[in-house]
Image 1 (cartoon, rainbow, N blue to C red):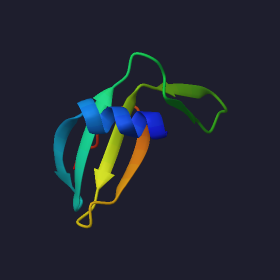
Image 2: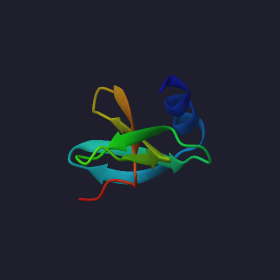
Image 3: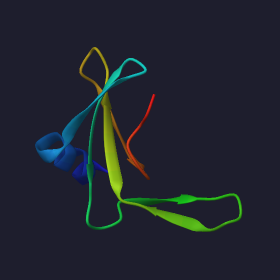
Image 4: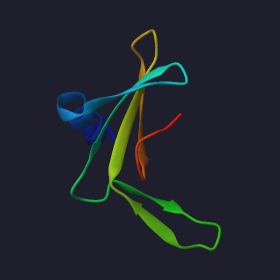
Length: 69
């Protein structure tokens, strides 16, 4: 996740302020993670997002798409 976070910091784009966090994200060519569905299947994730709070702390998350309100 550190490499994903660094790539978003360097090349990601601002996607807006949602639920009190500034958000930055980008699509990756290779999968950066996966989600396990209740039926046990895996969904590969290609989008990475960083949420930044008012104290400039951030949290990186692999997602299927960017966050929406």
